[in-house]
Image (tube, rainbow, N blue to C red; front, side, top):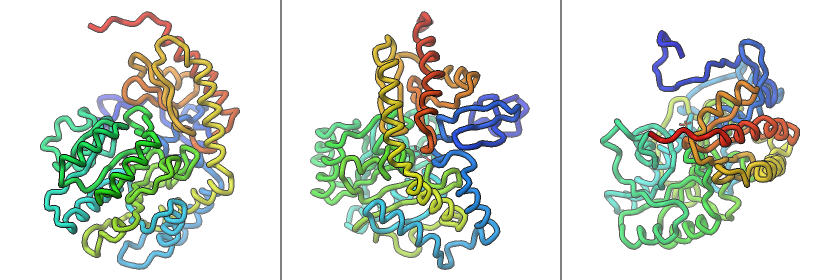
Length: 399
Ligand SMILES: *Cc1c(COP(=O)(O)O)cnc(C)c1O
């Protein structure tokens, strides 16, 4: 971005601007075509320009875009019913983004604590976690870079290592003010780390035992990305609170907090709200996304195409010196290298592929769920030589 940009410099964008998209393809303003293996960070579930989504949104724009939550909303009720049906949970609050969904989850946990006579409620959060960039959600995030400069942080969070059941049990024994356990089913920004099924099951047991809320942030790993509607479903648990966002609207901003049991009844009129949240345009995007996912069998294909891609990457890169690990589930895959991998983003762009690097050393693949095996093969053809080339170059010694 030139120094003269009128934008605040919150990002260092690649020097490419996309003018339009078609399915798994993006086109830049010069007319170059790129394979999208990022989906705008797990957002464009149906790829770009999906005819069903375009038609539904056009129709909705011509009908009504916004009316506020001061009036009944049939579309909100429809989408809420879909989400509760798919999750086995009971009630939904709609908002506009991931951090807002997480902020609402944190408020539910605190109010739940107060309602049980705990005046200074604490929420268990995790190393490497990412929950957003509002003050509360960055305080819950386990990354000092996200927090630095924004102190004082919001209090009331207790941090533990991920997938460490003993540490969680210890917190339970030592801290009487804990009211909730808050984690991603798969840590996305933190480098694609899955919560083990046994860990989620143990967390569920502990929450039941202690009267804590199990709050699973599915903002990135939810909405079908792993081949189930929600990533925690692989572990057979049901959370009390589940924030959603990114992929739910296929590109239209949307957030949702799905709740179950006691957590679903915590908010009363006046406790929480939003002007834009749940607007008819976003609801229509959410409903259409879920409909098309079902009609086109995108859960199954996320799983099978993802498994195939994973196996190929393992075969091609698994034994290569410098590849630390290849992890993930469905169409959420991370390739951890032993060195910074950021330069791969620009190199892949030069070769017509959009991908991402997170946690400095983890190549992150989050293609749209309409990705097919032939697209995975095209991705592999570009990505594998790029990674090998990076790893085969002599490493600059750390100064
Ligand atoms: C992206 C993300 C968020 C924040 O979502 P925004 O819409 O950017 O506020 C929260 N939690 C997780 C797990 C995420 O991946």
